[in-house]
Image (cartoon, rainbow, N blue to C red; front, side):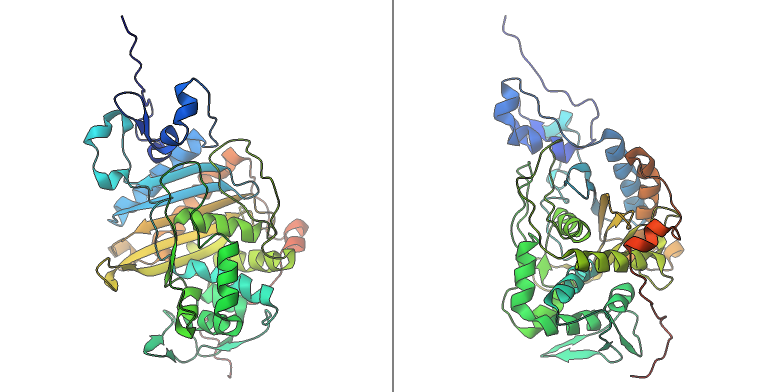
Amino acid sequence: MKLKIKRIYPNNTLASHILGATDIDGKGIAGVEKKFDSQLQVGKDVTLSIHGGIQHITRTLLLDQIKKFEAEGGAGIIMNAKNGELFSVVSLPDYNANNYNSILNENLFNKATKGIYELGSTLKLITAAIAFESKLINENDVFDVSKPLKVSSRIINDFHPLNYAINIPEVIVHSSNIGSAKIAEKFGSSTQLKYLRSLGLLNMLSLEIPELGKPQVLIDKKVLSTMTISYGHGISITPMHLASATATIVNSGVKVNPTLIKGKTEKKNEVIISKETSIKMKSIMRLVVSNKNGTAKKAEASGYLIGGKTGTAEKINPSGGYYKKENIVAFTGAFPMNDPQFIITIMIDNPKGQKFSFGYRTAGWVVAPIVKQLVTRVAPILGVKPQLESSSKFSNNLLDFKIRGKNHGANL
């Protein structure tokens, strides 16, 4: 009698896009099952960095928010900011690999690692980092954002217009498209592409699953393209790409490559940006959450010193152009910002405005609140304790940029 072995997934949908599935003959056909099939077939172990509890919490909170805003799906990632080990990678809708043959194709699609999206203003973090690294602009230089910016046939506007000139920290905190575009014009297309490439945003990641997406970037070196890429339009990347770039920015500029394998060691420390630029970026990211004018203020969780950036972008229409009433909303950031240990990146696909959100479907309303909930839930598991923001450790590690309010009314 021949012994037949069948793979069982006792946690059903948990981490389904990462674990993958096997066919009727036990051969890996998706996820880790496919990537490491030759090892698993001969009984070798593969130890993943995914934490079951953190994966469950991420999935539960993300699913609740997707339902609350009647969205089409989303992705959630929590990662070690130092070595890239992934504690949770969620893509919704997901599937139960025990019933693989009856799963809808849309459920099989991994939004976290394969889906590419224009992630909007989250890319302003990269624009600011490039600006500081170029040495052409410093944190005190100001940019007039009081009027819409006309470039070729395009008019660049701000969601919340300001009537005064603002500096780089204020561009990020207020999320000014006009300011970001003017900053990018200063350093130009070649410098922009150089850093996008070095941050890994032009190529497929080397993550240990086969379901990986390749970024799409409009590389025509025109001024308009350079400007729109600066605030996340004309560049489509996966949420995992964004998490990786965020980690590099806060990890003293040392490149962080995401990994699903526990204990995997990097062969080299590749420095992408300077430690000085990293400190400036961490300081600004903290203000996006802690400042009353910050677009991610709803992500604030007392004592955990969260920092990051929101992004809201019109969803791309595969037939051309954009859906005017459909958004991709995202957040990427880290905590605690005085010594970032963990990255959190969230994306939600096409949320609908609700009464409780006053009709808003922006990242500040949709994604920021889930960041607060997630950090509050997972921080104790990760060994992160709340701390006072006024502590000497905090003030020594971050810079105190002054952010003016929306109605400051300074003379130009």
